Length: 210
Image 1: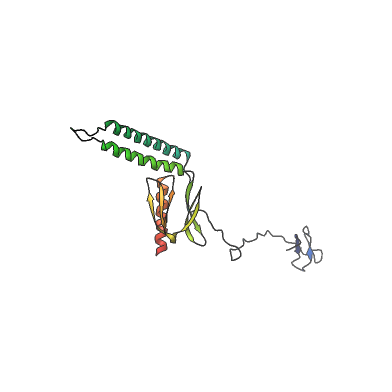
Image 2: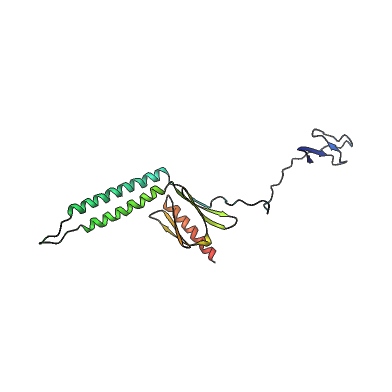
């Protein structure tokens, strides 16, 4: 069988005579025409057929769900409320210094207020970054295993050989990458996925240094 100008040509296996596509017997020698199903093999990857730059992600940290974002928003609003309440309590209980006694400052309420303020800032960052970033770990044909951060304002591709270390910040649900001369923070929607990605990245870093 051959292809000539877009048409499929068949030939008799006995005498080599050209056959029509509907012929059941060769008109020259009378031999029966046998047609077999044929599946073309897939082309092998070679120099002329480059492999894709990105394969399917090994691990994916998807964007936060609406339920998760609402939870962060509630915690942020609650922390902001208790921060304001702590400030009010400190102001109410404050007594200025006099001839009789020193100024009285409610230090426990100040410490509580600072705690809730930091909490509000953390969950505020999580809420604002939820739709901008998600982390994906890809396997690439040139650089081997690499970590990508894709999101709203930038996209970076960092091979593991360039990563000096990764810290998992559970409170912020974030991966903190120590790179040469800079630091990258990658936010995740949940703590468990953050831990898995941190362990995976650190394992690949250790393997690349051996």
